[in-house]
Image (cartoon, rainbow, N blue to C red; front, side, top):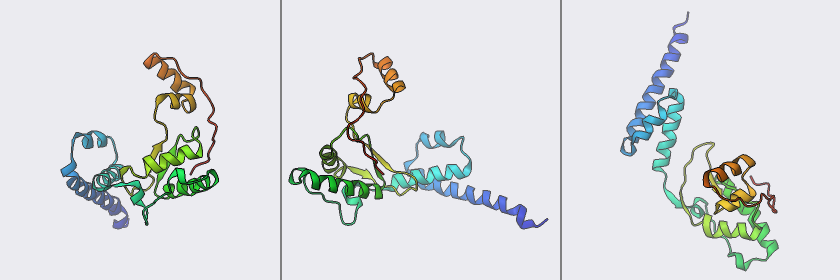
Length: 183
């Protein structure tokens, strides 16, 4: 038997343990009990990925989302655009946001102008941590109240649970008017 065949899994395990120790040392200033509680059932490779993502989060700067772009994303005010120009600009803006892993959810109840206003007034100026973790995104739900969620997006089970938990009458369920195929 070739010694390199049996020593490679051991070397991989040692590398994982060394990486784990380094990540835990670097996370020490940010440490709380949630790290140990979250990792006790993970294998070492998964734990290291988790710790690396936590470290990236802790070190990431909080910046206005508009500043995540080069050059900074600046949009004309919604009032300065006619409907056709606004709709065209909205599509490009959504694609640009997606390029920085900002994903919009729950938009189908909004007109193009209403969605553009949310991006212009709420999303672009909002300070968020820009974290470069593969497969992760910033999800922005474009609803601001339970009634909208219940009316347009909650499924039957979610509606029933909400009604049971809060003992309230539910708004009628509706299909949103402005179906979008967003990235």
